[in-house]
Length: 450
Ligand SMILES: [Zn+2]
Image (cartoon, rainbow, N blue to C red):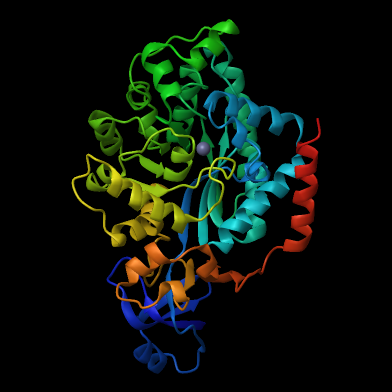
């Protein structure tokens, strides 16, 4: 048993309070309360006081692609054309990187998250094994969603589903208490209707978590609603028979039954009132990725409406190939500022609800809210200690404002998952950072060879 105390506790499930403490026993939170009372009740426990700091739940990153971390900055020259960007990414991943390189890349991404106070990832993996190993080696929690390969033809659905299931079952055998395996049919424009149906049937029957990219870009919208645009031309040029459903991506996913699997849907930019209703009615989740969306120039998702509808919404960094960092606090701050900038806003989103989205919201989006997302007795001890002593953070008049608008990844002092410290004061407790940095630089050199 150990006790952490600090000037501030942000339980998220209750109002923040000063001079608090938290009792941790094994992997769980035993008690959250005022320091004085807790020290009286547990006089023999090992105690550590962090002073000018906040203890709060760890951040949940609902949408990442850890295996692409070695591509940080590598694709920036192709960002003006989303389709070209996707092709350059796929070719590089398939032709330049070995399995070992992809795993090192994923380990680096997970390490970056741990250093930034992320305790849980919803990670999409074309090579799911890399993400799984990355979370395990960093001591993180999460769900690895094994992604489909490019499979737009109905006639290939049966064979492609069998291949996907094989990968999924092999990964599932290596599941742990902390890391679970799900499935990810990539997107409505790269997966055939029949394959979507097969994955959905399996996921509903076997209670498997599903995550999908949808309603992300104009390219996708053009293809889905009118059968036009770059993707449509790509299909036509290759003789791929793909007929547009002539409805929005979300409506399409509803029409073919995919929302029955209550998927975690990444992006949801191109969504109207009806789409939002469908997401609400199906109790699906949303991974809001504002920085990735902005960096591509895709547009701004209606985050305020997601909150007002009380949807299961959390933040996603997306891959660092499109972000270029994994810092959920910065993601949250950017989301708040963007939402406040929208001309159709009805109100100013409060710092409190944005911090809640970064923690409990993410847990809900991943359907893990009974285990994580708040500091409450009985929940998993997934928490961070965030320093509040830096010059740029003082004076402190409003703790939510200090966390959201004046703090960043560099202020995270401790990251703990299931009662185990995985990061403290600039150093991972799990990974040899020097060796990993050397390996990543070698991989980057290989990627740039012609
Ligand atoms: Zn993504």
